[in-house]
Image 1 (cartoon, rainbow, N blue to C red):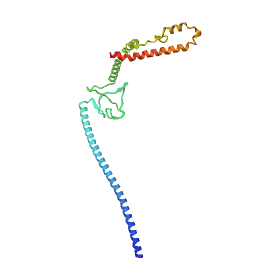
Image 2: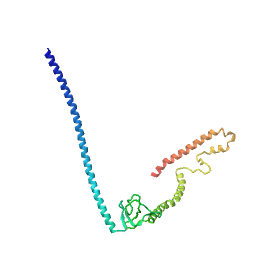
Image 3: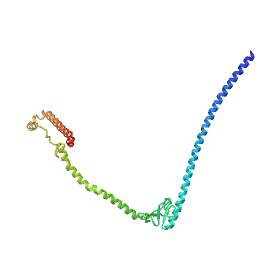
Image 4: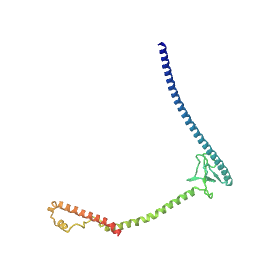
Length: 246
């Protein structure tokens, strides 16, 4: 009996140890897989960064080559044209004619446009394609020319504004006549052409003592007349497309 119990305990311990070993192996395998994925991602990022760095190096080499070409062309140009120089921005300027504003010399604040290429020195005028310096007088003349062009563009509109307004005013009465409307006089409202003669006679012969009593009747007639006018306007508007189509 004693041997059987010992054997059973050994088997249970062995099974527990085996289960623990399996669980530990599985956890470690998951950790190893995670590390493997991270390593793969890092390798991908390193590869992309290397490609980008190579691309930047190529662009840098191309830029350095262009800079050297620019310097060589600049030296050659300045040797052929001793009165001109090329600033750091690639703009051709004059060595003899200096840039002014309001009669004062212009100072280069960053050293990119001066003749010596130093900060605080005077800078030359920009030259045109024919190598003529663009002085302050030329700039002012160009500005005046632009102002004159703007004024000339405004003149036709200014001259045509009054005739256009006059023609618009003249065209209003015929349009109102076509629509069956009548322009109201300056001293009051337009007369009601649809009012009946009997209503006018009644208003003219009604004594003052009966004016208050007949006020509702007058209001009813006025509302009826306005409805007639509104109906007349609607009929004219509805018939206008038909007439144009015929």
